[in-house]
Image 1 (cartoon, rainbow, N blue to C red):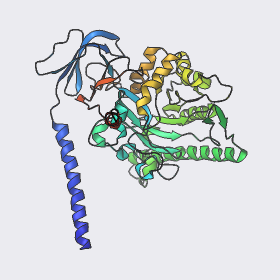
Image 2: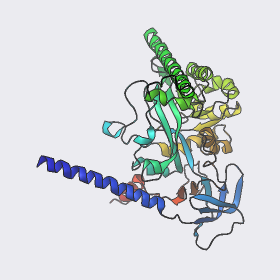
Image 3: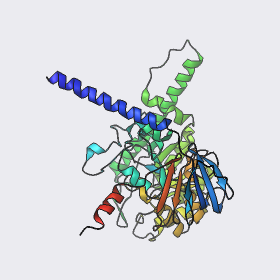
Image 4: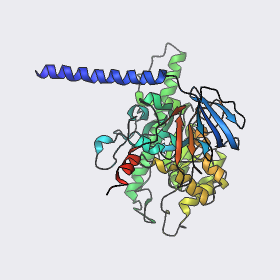
Length: 440
């Protein structure tokens, strides 16, 4: 009887998997509708603003943009009068899809593997396409996120995903696009709490940090040696092939410059350490966090290293710091010539991305640059600017139609397209609102 139950359970599991695959294939093969968004204000990001124009969407891509676009008879027309069209926003570092309830429900969290070195771990394989947090993230105009693993020194491979699809591979825009590295820090690393930094490192903690830095360098050295041995064996068949090491194998694209390292570093020492690693191992590096990036702005500009800021809506770093230090950081870095992008570094708060950029715009960053920080800049940083990041012919139709400025709190998203497919805007938040707004 027990064996029969096991067989039935396995059969049901297999049937469910087959249904999921069938639905996925059916969706991918279904012809996409043609849409025309007419009489709208079109913010292209890279080619200015068209005050009254049309965006034509066909076969998942932007077919035409302009003030005089011919609309096919079979197109579904959306009246854009008094509305604006923007490219979908990109959050440049999240754990969206890897966690559902961060506190108190460990079974819903899949962000971190055991050990310090997990280069072969792929965020894409762990993303839950049916997370309730994904439609919540979309509600404010975010269509694409970089999802990265966490923990250890080398956390694993990041994936850039569109926030629509039955499966991870339907969501995938590009993967892997970066390797997540956490630069070692002593103590609490300047933990921020109500304007004060506490937890200053002691000597033991500093020694621990130094050991971790050496371990990180040794892992990169080992990966270089592994790559050289593999190339030598490929060139000379008399040299025995080295045993495959999945962790070192996964680091080859990083060493070859095919993908960048996205290095979590906030303090000046950590950022300088990340730059030294980039120089020594010839790595492409992106700094994420970047609280003290302004102190290293000259080096960042010279080496063309972008910064992904994730602390815009946080408290100042110390008691004597000005209240607007985190708000003004983006504007100061822009003045210094450093390319910036914005991130929430989160899952449940990805919907707040436009307010990070909008706050930076209110405190010194030019408004056009703030918009670029959530559109074309991240697309360029992660090498997908030919696909997304602006409204241009030939790019994926990741579009957001709003009733106002996309970075303003009062603005509402009226329509959204991801890869040319119109996306349903309802989510857990809207359902709860509708349920309780008229409660007696």
